[in-house]
Amino acid sequence: MKTFTQSLSGFITDFNLTRQDGIICFDSTIYFSSYTNFIQMPTEVQIISMENIELVYLLSPDIDRFFIPDMYTVGKEFFKYIKNAALIIKGHSTIQGRYTLSIHPEGVECAPETLKEIHGRTYN
Image (cartoon, rainbow, N blue to C red; front, side):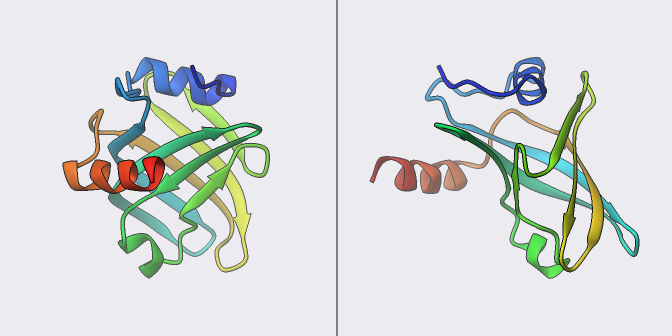
Protein backbone atom coordinates (compact mmCIF):
# COMPACT_ATOMS: atom_id res chain seq x y z
CA MET A 1 0.00 0.00 0.00
CA LYS A 2 1.41 3.38 -1.00
CA THR A 3 1.49 6.02 1.71
CA PHE A 4 0.44 9.61 1.16
CA THR A 5 0.34 12.75 3.26
CA GLN A 6 -2.94 13.45 5.01
CA SER A 7 -4.09 15.96 2.36
CA LEU A 8 -3.53 13.59 -0.55
CA SER A 9 -4.76 10.54 1.34
CA GLY A 10 -8.09 12.18 2.23
CA PHE A 11 -8.54 13.40 -1.34
CA ILE A 12 -7.76 9.98 -2.85
CA THR A 13 -9.97 8.12 -0.37
CA ASP A 14 -12.98 10.44 -0.46
CA PHE A 15 -13.11 10.44 -4.26
CA ASN A 16 -12.28 6.70 -4.52
CA LEU A 17 -9.42 7.39 -6.95
CA THR A 18 -7.21 4.32 -6.45
CA ARG A 19 -7.60 1.68 -9.14
CA GLN A 20 -7.23 -2.01 -8.37
CA ASP A 21 -3.77 -1.99 -10.00
CA GLY A 22 -2.67 0.85 -7.69
CA ILE A 23 -2.56 3.56 -10.36
CA ILE A 24 -4.20 6.86 -9.46
CA CYS A 25 -5.27 8.61 -12.65
CA PHE A 26 -8.57 10.44 -13.14
CA ASP A 27 -10.45 13.06 -15.16
CA SER A 28 -10.81 16.45 -13.54
CA THR A 29 -11.52 20.10 -14.04
CA ILE A 30 -8.77 22.42 -12.82
CA TYR A 31 -8.91 26.08 -11.92
CA PHE A 32 -5.55 27.84 -12.11
CA SER A 33 -5.29 31.37 -10.82
CA SER A 34 -2.33 33.74 -10.67
CA TYR A 35 -1.96 37.50 -10.57
CA THR A 36 -2.50 37.75 -14.34
CA ASN A 37 -4.52 34.63 -15.23
CA PHE A 38 -7.58 32.62 -14.35
CA ILE A 39 -7.82 29.41 -16.37
CA GLN A 40 -10.39 26.64 -16.16
CA MET A 41 -9.82 23.48 -18.16
CA PRO A 42 -10.35 19.73 -18.18
CA THR A 43 -7.32 17.51 -17.69
CA GLU A 44 -6.39 14.04 -16.61
CA VAL A 45 -4.43 13.95 -13.37
CA GLN A 46 -1.99 11.32 -12.10
CA ILE A 47 -0.85 11.06 -8.47
CA ILE A 48 2.34 9.16 -7.71
CA SER A 49 4.06 8.17 -4.46
CA MET A 50 7.68 6.94 -4.65
CA GLU A 51 9.81 6.42 -1.55
CA ASN A 52 10.09 9.97 -0.10
CA ILE A 53 8.33 11.95 -2.83
CA GLU A 54 4.69 12.53 -3.75
CA LEU A 55 3.83 14.08 -7.09
CA VAL A 56 0.72 15.35 -8.85
CA TYR A 57 0.91 15.51 -12.66
CA LEU A 58 -1.47 17.37 -14.98
CA LEU A 59 -1.55 15.33 -18.19
CA SER A 60 -3.39 17.57 -20.69
CA PRO A 61 -1.20 18.77 -23.57
CA ASP A 62 -2.93 22.16 -23.27
CA ILE A 63 -1.21 22.79 -19.91
CA ASP A 64 1.96 23.97 -21.73
CA ARG A 65 -0.01 26.37 -23.92
CA PHE A 66 -1.05 28.34 -20.82
CA PHE A 67 2.38 28.10 -19.13
CA ILE A 68 0.85 26.22 -16.18
CA PRO A 69 3.25 23.96 -14.29
CA ASP A 70 2.44 20.31 -15.02
CA MET A 71 4.10 18.78 -11.93
CA TYR A 72 3.52 19.55 -8.24
CA THR A 73 5.55 18.11 -5.37
CA VAL A 74 4.35 17.69 -1.79
CA GLY A 75 6.72 19.70 0.40
CA LYS A 76 7.72 22.08 -2.39
CA GLU A 77 4.20 23.41 -2.94
CA PHE A 78 1.50 23.78 -0.27
CA PHE A 79 -1.26 21.13 -0.47
CA LYS A 80 -4.65 21.36 1.21
CA TYR A 81 -7.70 19.17 0.77
CA ILE A 82 -11.18 20.67 1.07
CA LYS A 83 -13.33 17.68 1.97
CA ASN A 84 -15.47 16.36 -0.88
CA ALA A 85 -14.67 19.43 -2.99
CA ALA A 86 -11.12 19.87 -4.27
CA LEU A 87 -7.40 19.49 -3.77
CA ILE A 88 -5.80 22.94 -3.49
CA ILE A 89 -2.15 23.51 -4.39
CA LYS A 90 -0.40 26.84 -3.83
CA GLY A 91 3.03 27.61 -5.11
CA HIS A 92 5.26 29.85 -7.21
CA SER A 93 6.49 29.46 -10.77
CA THR A 94 8.96 31.53 -12.74
CA ILE A 95 6.42 32.48 -15.42
CA GLN A 96 3.18 32.74 -13.42
CA GLY A 97 4.54 33.94 -10.08
CA ARG A 98 2.36 32.98 -7.10
CA TYR A 99 -0.52 30.72 -8.08
CA THR A 100 -3.37 28.65 -6.71
CA LEU A 101 -4.50 25.47 -8.44
CA SER A 102 -7.65 23.59 -7.51
CA ILE A 103 -8.31 20.08 -8.81
CA HIS A 104 -11.92 18.87 -8.95
CA PRO A 105 -12.32 15.18 -9.91
CA GLU A 106 -14.89 14.49 -12.63
CA GLY A 107 -14.34 10.74 -12.81
CA VAL A 108 -12.34 7.98 -11.17
CA GLU A 109 -10.32 6.82 -14.15
CA CYS A 110 -8.28 8.18 -17.06
CA ALA A 111 -8.90 7.26 -20.68
CA PRO A 112 -7.79 3.75 -21.71
CA GLU A 113 -4.99 5.13 -23.92
CA THR A 114 -3.61 7.17 -20.99
CA LEU A 115 -3.70 4.14 -18.71
CA LYS A 116 -1.93 2.07 -21.39
CA GLU A 117 0.82 4.70 -21.60
CA ILE A 118 1.18 4.81 -17.79
CA HIS A 119 1.37 1.01 -17.64
CA GLY A 120 4.03 1.08 -20.35
CA ARG A 121 6.17 3.53 -18.35
CA THR A 122 5.56 1.72 -15.07
CA TYR A 123 6.23 -1.86 -16.08
CA ASN A 124 8.94 -1.46 -18.76
